Length: 425
Ligand code: SF4
Ligand code: SF4
Image (cartoon, rainbow, N blue to C red; front, side, top):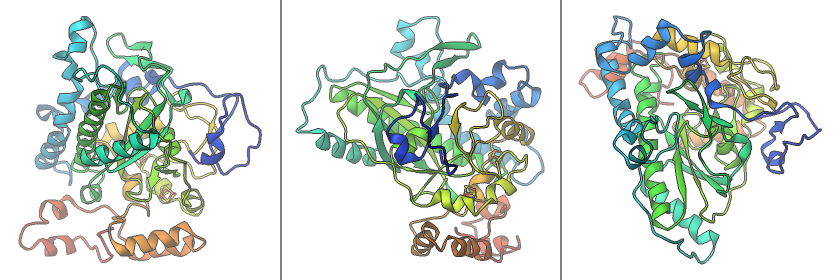
């Protein structure tokens, strides 16, 4: 949550960590209720509900896929996208057979989306005594890496970002927050998304990156949470449920928030998904770090220009909200969620054009992109932006480039798309 406007006055909701994140939390702040999340609203709010929204959700199951001739929306594209979501869907509904369900008859959960995960075995009966918090933290990093987490950051539990109430899909209303407020830490995990399919957004194919990101996320957080439980501590694994991931990722030192409203990291740029674990294991907290994203976004409006429904702001961060789907009282770049979601429904798949078009969307495992990052982080950021404009193809790539990549003649297929610039950003 960047905030380059000068707001010196603090409110009753401010915390010392805000001085490091530069988040301004004003007197109008109110904790977010999950039922106002745009996806939840599309289930109960007449203003957002529509046949197109229903078709958008149904389309994630093959018989209802809106297969058409438009590039990126063919049968193969939907087949891959929906397969990438499949394991995430299975885990989401796992409580039906799990012990939580057995003990809470009459409830339905959507784990990872509306509710935290309950699919755990019993852990150890008492907490393992680590030498100190550093030992536990080192172990968590090692374990997270083992379970495939792309990045790991740890911050203090912060009630401000916990949903005040959780969405109750059954009754289309609110139910109490279930995560106890005496947990002390939040482990925030980032899982990268595939850079090549994202080049094809908007497309059903690009949604495969999102689906697989959720699937990998679920596997990582459920396993890490089970490890913590096995060590005798409490742990609640969470994806989109329970709390806002972006401010927690910011406080956990994973990155900075860009104009597109997304967290931008030095490892994956904006191309990843966030999940988290709430725990009482004693852990050392990371320090939020800035590496120049806010300054870069001040000279760049690529995502705002590229967004088809114009949902991304061109101006400086403010505490203006577009609708009840935005949290009030926080100075930041705020995306118009209603416009964004309508575009998703109209094209019958999720969209991440604001990720594809961002200059930080690069493969930083390559030296030339790490050198670019050095430029982008410093006073030569305008040169970095110019280099991105000049040498990196940010336009949409036809899905044939992805499907044919391993076939003979693939190079020819790619070059036919008029892609004369570097395309492996
Ligand atoms: S996801 Fe697409 S519609 Fe939504 S803000 Fe990003 S570019 Fe705009
Ligand atoms: S596209 Fe430009 S303005 Fe938008 S988030 Fe990326 S760097 Fe910032």
